[in-house]
Length: 132
Image (cartoon, rainbow, N blue to C red; front, side, top):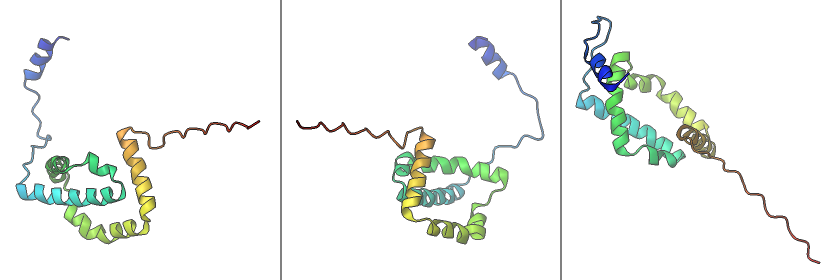
């Protein structure tokens, strides 16, 4: 198909459906609350694996929060409720993992998620020459 055909198809009205959810508006307060939550989350991950800080700067966290709120509203997710219900268990999980283990695991997850090889092959040492 050529571009004109695709544009014509896109311009045609689609079928109306009562089951399609309407786009939910995110209030600035909801976005700010989600942004604070994600900031804390990524600070914890960043303390364990500094690479996380490179991938999630403040402007990226803000974009995640803005995208998160409508999805959370649509699905009925209540992050504040999760923290109220599971906060002690989450804290226990972080407390049980020694920082080096947490750092190693998160580092490997970040490398895997970004497609970077965490373990580069080690170069074999050159064989020692025997002195005559």
